Image 1 (tube, rainbow, N blue to C red):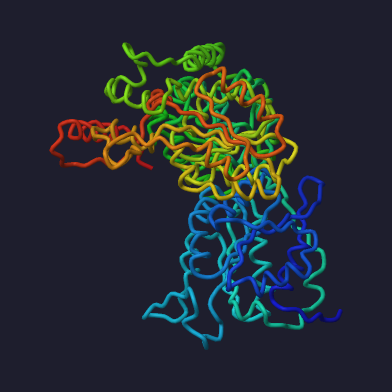
Image 2: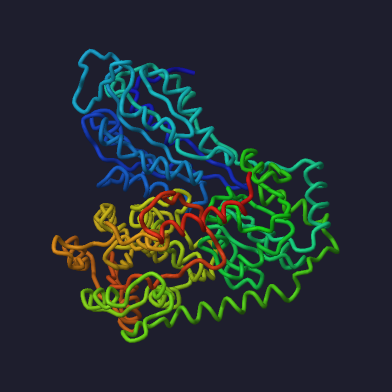
Length: 635
């Protein structure tokens, strides 16, 4: 076989076009496209190659490096990690802007290919524009900051290095156990250098997602532990969703009367109306799920990382509960000193099921009783109303009546966040996709959002990165263009990053932003006040201490979006109905009152509290947290 002379960038683009993935008998291209913001570190290399021949790759111009990277992450998440977008940036600040997104992808085990430009391999023009310098090494660049945030990292200083580097990167991205961001830094001079590449490098290459099967020892041990338990609970994590284990999970749960509880990543693996699905677990969980978990003698974790929110900082479970983990990652399977089944979730459960013939838990009717009781609480939350003379119970503990009155007057609203959320849930199409990431909204949707169609819940909470919400909606829309996609964003997150809203409008990728404006960082204000503090730098106020009231609808209108203002249930329903008819992106601005989100249901979060303080309330909060820390599982 001969050779073909190409620049490093041209070889990169040609290689990306030839990468395929094979999953359960289906084969399709792995790389869907490339997000780009061109600068002097990539426009003349990668940019030239894409302009010359992008092949089947869809090329999308981003507006902020973090934003477009989050769109790529959400796309991969919605595609169950089976397809990706690549992301190319310039050197220096453009590359540095990838850091938050790289952390998001790493924490959530989402494959994405980052291609930041880098300084000159020759070092002859050093220091070039946007290059940092370190006295201890001339080899250090901004891109070194991405090393701890990447599952695979490399720097290309010779054209021929591209071959081995790309093979390593794709091996990592297509391995369910290691999936995460792969970063290949491209020295800007090398991007344009030519090399005689072997033509075989550009042949179609298929990456197989073969399901890792459990060994007999693992199956026998898992079956024994389940059979010996009286009240097992299954924790449905993100690995269960990516493994597409929905059907076998439903079968196991129904046949053996084992309740299901969900992590943020696992939610919508199983529909909310499945009788044994008790909803979210932990700090952002439902009362039903948390009671079931507390009473369980065996916790069966399916593809979960056991984050502190899911485990209520390791206090969610009975002290004597045992753990059985099924996870494709050996590291994750070891969590909480569990019996480990290192295997694909779907494959393991399908082989485990025959070994449980005749077994039933003793939960019985308790499952439906817990679910019914939570349904009553959700119904109450759907009708929370603000009254000046007797404000809602959720507010009473930490917020003065006169302050709430001030917000109601300043924002001209009495709308409660829980009422607004449930109204949205019950109005939009059931196959619509919601996207959110940070603040109080993930807690609310984990508890009260009822997805009745699988894989319609794209919530990033492994990193809880503000700015994912709107960017992620664009990524989800690219993944499923025929569905309505809704970004649920607080005003804090909107101000943090909404640049890819413009990208969605530019490329006619219709998304709907539901903006919950409570004039502040409401979630952190709750944390601050709930632990004895005041309300310090967490509200949005003017220089003269007035509540900051921003017309976000007018901002979005300036971008070209269709906008609505809805501060009542009736107005919100009307806005949602009309927004669905639109062909362009929309924004619905809702002014909601602070402290009208959900709170914890028999859960606890371990946070750092000042051990010394002049405030008695903070002193008491520290005593309380020290007591709870004694109850937490120590590994």
